[in-house]
Amino acid sequence: MEGVRLALELRAQFPAVVAGYHTNKRLWNTVTLDGSVPAEEIRDMVEHSYDQVVARLPKAVRLRLDR
Image (cartoon, rainbow, N blue to C red; front, top):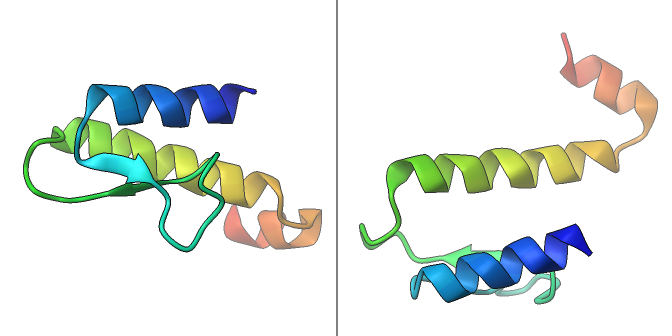
């Protein structure tokens, strides 16, 4: 699974990235914003997470978000 692979890679690369807290620990990460993860990487993580959530919404809801 691509999501699991990405989650594990980020955990291996950054000590501030750990298994998700109160979420599916296989797919989601918790990131401690201590300055050790570059801002660009944080932005990429947030955008990826947003895309994953939006992709699972009903089509009508997704269409409203595109406005």
